[in-house]
Image (cartoon, rainbow, N blue to C red; front, side, top):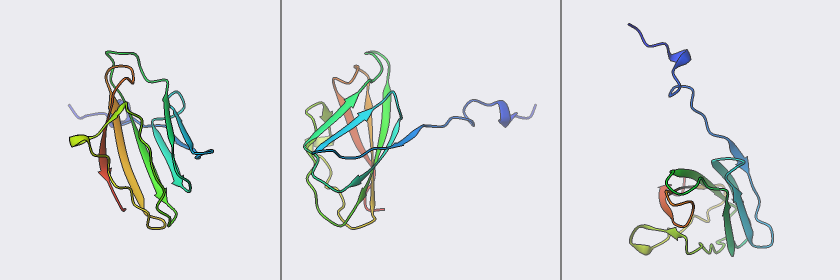
Length: 121
């Protein structure tokens, strides 16, 4: 029996994308609004707020796509974000280049496990 791709939920899966801005050093990602966030890095980020993850025991993931504007801005990650070997990636500063980062939690956002999808696209 052939697969009906029009009714296959895996084939029809999409994610909501939202463009968000850095405001006075704060970047807020509301997971009720999207699961992929587009951000132009045009200022230092001193506070990253991730709001409305699923409750503990349910996995929740999101992607963050930074576009550099040619200046090396700082990024302060919250202590809830854990990186492999404890080292956050060095983000790209070359104008127009993109960094793609992914984050997953299984404990309601107490810990976010971050990993690099790719840098300097």
